[in-house]
Image (tube, rainbow, N blue to C red; front, side, top):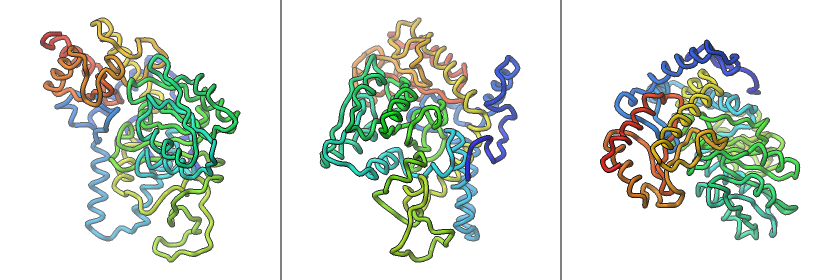
Length: 422
């Protein structure tokens, strides 16, 4: 089953789509739809939630979907195949989100599970190398590659440039022994975008596998498997996809997947020609084509029900309108912070800006703390007034999604202005 073109499932949030021509009327329609979608998150009546870069808040529709799953489990009459329909619907919708085909998408547990699945499926030889920017990657896109050193694999670490992953330096670091180049589409801190399309073109020309950690982009910022030219991409459902912890997606380009041999195998990774879940195995088997060969064991059905519903919400609003909306909010917030003399990582107007806004100096602190007294005071005041955000690598970190609006921006700014000693 393929996923190009419009989503095959009805989406009720709005009638205008991502293909609608941009106009004042279209913007007004999108704004109305975004405000309607905000009502899906009742917690926003109590909190100013600027923390999508760490975790999701669950929309009503996803909560209702999980409740339906639990009701079905309690009733005991729904078959495993019927539950599995939600797995397949969610797979198709995620494929549509990133402009892929559904057989190129696997359900995995986490980002690290997806990345490890690829890292362990490659036939490594001593002297092979992996290119990455260790200083800006989450540990889950470092440890799987570092673990390969025991096989004689070299890690070629590229230095950041102005707090961002340097695409040109990454490309220059590749040679004839490079097997993988890997990067976050948006770094966890300082939250800057990576030019993955440029890296993707260079990697494709050289026959190097390009693996992307897309967790800070998926569901919020545009990802396109056909134009960004990544070969593999891993994400979880617990951030921008507005789902549950312990579940995620792995995209692997069909041509690549069919050449990789997974380190672990279960029935879901075998071409079983429609046999039942409970049937016995056979010593003679063939790997299923595409990314599904990386799926292991039973699916997290509750997570599939949840993300199926949240993907309806995301696709109903449209990929481009969501990106446009969050970039407008981050631009406004960034410019206002600059006016207040606060050090923002990506200046207003920077092409590296994303939906994440970070304040402070990178590595001037750590996880949940900063060495900057002014930032600590602001952080304490915001938290005391129910603004949800994080501190990462010593920087205040704010993340916007489609449910945020200018009232959230203004409230955060008003509290910063009112912060004692600021």
